[in-house]
Length: 280
Image (cartoon, rainbow, N blue to C red; front, side, top):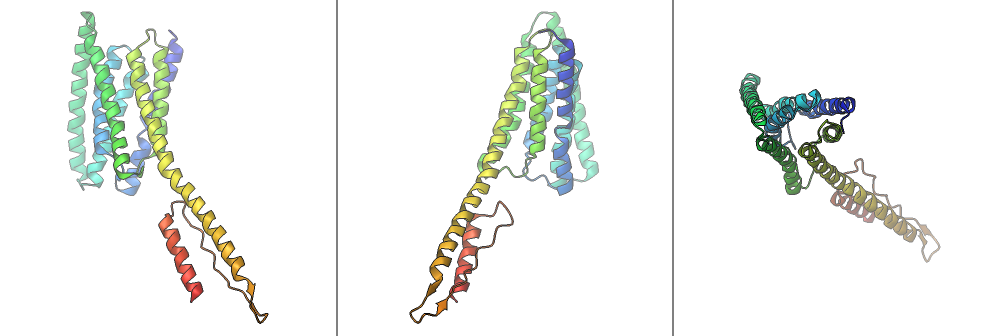
């Protein structure tokens, strides 16, 4: 489907999303002065993925927005990556700037060489090098996201992940995917690259829902059970003794949690302490 206006518009939106996708994570790292929950290997994989993806998009004559998009991904990924060394390993700012500058220049030189080589291969009607770049970029992008899956599996938490960043990244994948669909020539591999990452991000969202919502639901159910038990004990304690004197036992109700992530163990401990004070 050849609709240049739609391709450029959607590609630009996708590029804008990819331009700001890592900015929330960078800001969070700066404010916390740590990169807990962020995998530096993921950021390095994404920085490297921008090289073959940029070469693939440029050699494939994608719209300008999609040609610029991988360069932005590489730059922001490198910034986020070097933050890990600055905040967690206590590297000095000057050392970080010099180190990341050398890495960035190296990646830029490699991409420039790949673009020249791919264009020459296309002139000789050899398409396998371009396809190879697409496959490599897809592998590196997917490996970066899968690194989060491994971390979530091992630690059973999504702590440190910015879901604003995840949402913006996923939106960028969607718009980029549709943009490729409106190119003069349908590029199936290009669509697969963006679709694969989008599906993987949906999985991260699902993990976030499980690890964040499940404890909240369990806490609500536990609190309801405690309240019901306390009401039954309160009714049982309001009795009249044999001499006709009323002896009301004031049972202090368990305090409400100030956090939806209050653990069941903490709630049980609180309830036990309340009962011990009542008996005394």
